[in-house]
Length: 301
Image (cartoon, rainbow, N blue to C red; front, side, top):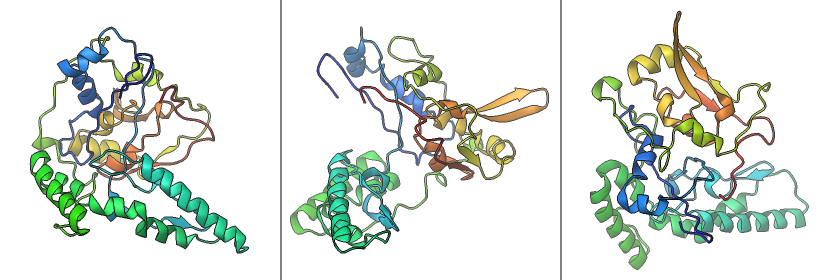
């Protein structure tokens, strides 16, 4: 994205249903910046900010119940991203409008603390639902067949939906979760990524400093392990403990000492991307809300 004052924002999306546990999304991004078409935009520039976020791209098939007693889920928190357009701002704003109108009706009727079920209905039957239904098979096709076949299938499906209001492929399911898609380390080889050059590409911890994240060190760790033994007992031998790589902030480490390997959680680095809660193959990590106000403080983002 190009902005005023010679500002350029560069992002890189890695689908979290990848199989190779040695894949390192952060380093894929650093390598991407050295592509000639990208490098020429960045040469001579100065980095001013860094951040990361997991995109909820399940779309129509993955929409949860959107209301609960006293509240609702809006925008990307409910997964309202239009995957082919890589865009969710429009639906986030529309969902805010629908929620406000549903809340206004409830207040006018003297209700309080109950579920805004008419908000659920408005999202599913209104402009948001129409937007998401048309593109609902793009991500499942992509996951199942890869880029080029999915472009053909998804394009035909969206074309049919645009003309007739019906999807040619009907509704495809997503299949495995991103955690379940992770393969065993024995079936893959480690990936040798080039070392960051300090001009276009940077090491992970240095970049985290540019997210201006901060957590009070005396608070309890907000990244909880259901079973503290699983990272070393299961994830390390079976999956080469991918938390060391899928985290874009270097929160998780396997440290070797005299007693053997230890799993370390540097929760102060967390940029609240939620990837660990999604991608951990054992589903052992639970992201919880940290102390109020703590976390990344993104400028210019």
